[in-house]
Image 1 (cartoon, one colour):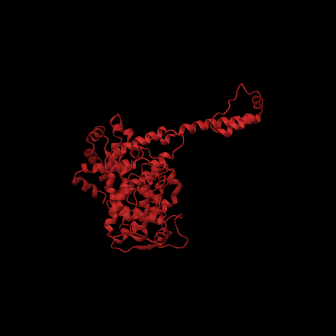
Image 2 (cartoon, one colour):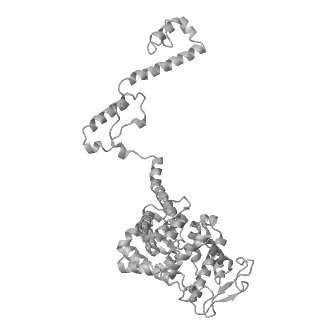
Image 3 (spheres, rainbow, N blue to C red):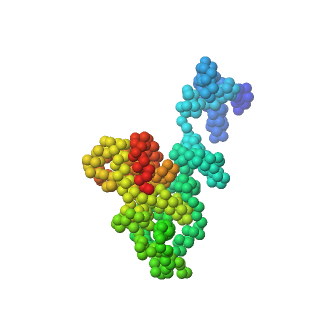
Length: 468
């Protein structure tokens, strides 16, 4: 073992004896022990590492490539030198003494062509909504800075370009407040809403109960968050509000009756309640489409679906009540009239707008006797809320509240344009249009904005006022 130590002392990286050296029998005898074998394995590893170390003293491939790249970059123009594509410094190259890995490969235009990691992509994707969220929270707390009209214009633009931040279920803490701002809804105390609830069943209560259990019945997201009782209370409170508005326009004063004369046990309060009903000359029940009336009703079929997104997005029933009542009375009062004349005008406008946006598709559907009144009536009445998924409906409504609910007609045409190839190749488009495909809010909004330039001014004016 003494010659062994001399070799290790003189040269730690060279002249390591082989495992089968023929001239050293005693050493071979000693190397048969397990302890000696372990020592030799360690020495072999040291020998291999030392070989790599000796080879690494020469310039590596990566170093040569980086040096070549640095020389090439010295010849480019000053504008390219300022683009951030300069190579590493010489100190970084000289201190690099490790084996090459895939990340060391030098690629030209690495800044422009290198793939972005998932984390960086997610950061870029959420950076703008996060800034928007911070900006909106500041507006909520401190109010708009400067001109209100300018702030509203910026808010609408942010809704169009960036959208509102929301989770996978479409839930957003600020959506209902954005809607209230865009609808210019007045503040309402919770006590005022509770007062409407305590009045018991409205004259339209029985008709409301016939529709509420069908409201988005197949949507698990909605069913998990909103109960049927909430829909009943909201619609009943809106019916009372509309009923009171009608009474104010009557010349005769309202008469006071007992709560037991009208109402339902589910909605009645324990204490006696004062109720207002219209005079005998006015309609005391809902004026549905079957009544054929022309005055404003207090409930029509479809209002249950129209109020569903408000209840889903709001943080309380009182907020949903304010937004829903404001929407149906200011944006689309023609949709809740007895004859629903606003809805019928909207359906007719779907045919006219489609003929301007896509004449070939419009002519094909017309040849198959597929007018919009056959397939578009629910979408017009409910502002596309009847078409899942619900998170996409909320995103589409952000756009409609920002730029006008009248654009829902053009959004329906955009859905047909998305289905264009399927409809044109189908011998029976009636079967295809029995149920529209799932909403794709971003694509629909993009097509809607693009198609608006094809609509003449006179038709656009009809769009603007058809629901009034």
